[in-house]
Amino acid sequence: MSNRSPKLDVVAVGAHPDDVEIACGGTLARLVAQGYRVGIVDLTDGEPTPGSPGPETRLAEARQAAEVLGVHERVVLDLPNRRLFDGFEARVALAKQLRRFRPRIVIGFGAKTPMASPDHWQAMLITDAAVFYSRLSKWDEYFGGLAPHAVAAQLYFRLAFEPPVLSGFASHFTIDISTTLDKKLAAIRCYQSQFPPAKEYVFDRIRGAAMLAGGSAGFQAGEVFVAARSLGAQDLVKTVLGEA
Ligand SMILES: [Zn+2]
Image 1 (cartoon, protein in one colour):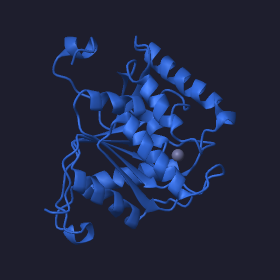
Image 2: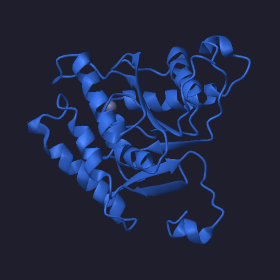
Image 3: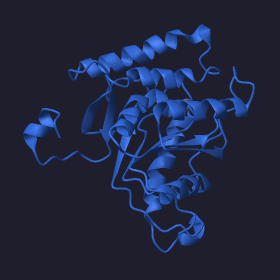
């Protein structure tokens, strides 16, 4: 079908450009280095925000950050920042992107982010629904003729500053980002409008969170994910020793 794009292995979904970099930028950069095809979908352009002159600046920052990570696709949807709500249009807008890119794995928000934007929680609801909508048959009229696509697995990420455990989920695991932590930080630094010199402390926090997460798994740095369903494994030894 003509409006389909080349397939991606993994799509990460954020509410605002910079969410995905902060949550799992090290893992995305590592996936790219491992040869997987990776994309990012931001549900909004993240604007307005206090330090940014306008959406063009934020979009340029997002493009630059995607280049640093090396991801193959980045789509910024035009859902409204600060007024992002789970609803039919938002679900369909994201599900169209999933039908377009046909990822095997979708990664997105997995919890509330108290004291930060409530858009994040709405993004989780939208992502859950879009993963489901993506595979529904006999509904093509809502998806611009894009055929259904069943996403094989869904993962949740955390922003760097939340507690390390997402309650209610059985399967937490840590990805080693020792070799890509610097790339993650460099990608976040692309957002100069969000992290000016007065907010330099943010980079210490993000680095600290990655080192804490990694250290608990025996890595120099890591990012924690949660599987929406319990993770299974075929080889106990390789899985437990991190060789799988
Ligand atoms: Zn955000």
